[in-house]
Length: 208
Image (cartoon, rainbow, N blue to C red):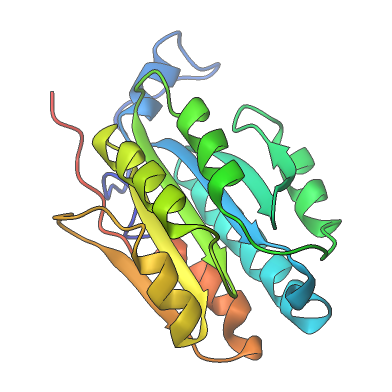
């Protein structure tokens, strides 16, 4: 079981078949909404992108198994593709598997999508970002990340190499109980690095 999900559990109580009308309410106590953002800029061409797709697939499988709604952003200097969390899982995977690399790097459009998605406040909300280089204008990007933090969104980052990781770490929420970042050392580790975002953040149990 991934450790970033809101609650660790072996079962969620009594169930019935067909599911009762309160099943969705019960599942929301354990799940939430995740937006996975994967860098598809030109420098990701070839093996880096193949690794990113592989890691993204594993991440999405774990998130769905944990009752999280999963959205996807393929980002470069803009939002290349966006799939909303309410979309069928098969379509999210299809968009990921057909990703192409092109363009530069700017996280501003991606963070604006996240800001719109996560309003109004809902259950547990997690923004997971992988990048292999620049994040764009930091005087613009960092304040947007702080706005998401103020909304209660949890941010998880993975960067290819120390430079990309250091830039992405500027987005982490100050004072977070479990800030989560990790350097991905080389291209062959991109897949496992992205997948690790589904296990690297200890989630906070929702407070009533």
